[in-house]
Amino acid sequence: MSRAERWADLMPRLISAVVMIAVGGFAVWRGGVIFDVLIAASCGGMMWELLRMVTPHRQGLALPLGVLAMGAVLAASLLGGTYGLAMLLVPVLLGVIGLDQRRGTFAGFGLWVMFAAFAFIWMRSALGLDWMVWLVAVVVATDVAGYFAGKALGGPKFWPRVSPKKTWSGTAAGWLAAAAVGAVFAAEAGIGLGVVVLSVLVSMASQAGDVAESALKRKMGVKDSSGLIPGHGGLFDRFDGMLGAAAMVLLVLSIWGLPGGAM
Image (cartoon, rainbow, N blue to C red; front, side, top):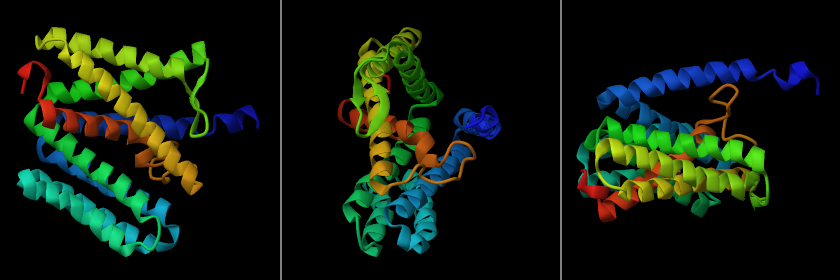
């Protein structure tokens, strides 16, 4: 491969990254309907990708299911409570009914996507901008620290069969970086060091999300979840870590509440 070919996708990757940062950053800052619709649309796109990966021969179901998932997330955010959570199950159940194979795989990943999308909307609405910034910072710090530590230190692989590039050194560095983000956030917000523990748990969940999506793609024999994002693959490829992090936050906060009672 020539040098030109090796860097051929650099410009599409950079342009896509700038657009994602600009659109996502504005939506997170603005909140409200803009944020909710963006998250719901992303959820619909990931459900579309999921069904196409799991059952390529039933692709006709993918678009209707994606649209339904988008509507279900918006409805859940409006209804809240038991009825809202029940709405999140509808696209998954209908998808399972419409499939003729790999129903368990679709159900597991579909539930993860739906509830993580709801967690994003709930966090931005109920907890405000600061906690959303904290969540994004933890995931980004985990990824960046893991990448550079893994490259610099190397060492034993974390799970070579599923994710050959991940090392234990990079994984641990991600936890430390997340703890540092949590410590800074705790100091700024004055809410105690419980958020440091939460940050590490969220970091682990982010890494687990990345590994889970990698395992799914390897099982399905695909390189990317789709080609929706030029130079980056699909929505699932870019936001698997965020999905894991959001799901962990929803689980922890629903059981124990926020550290320091900063709800």
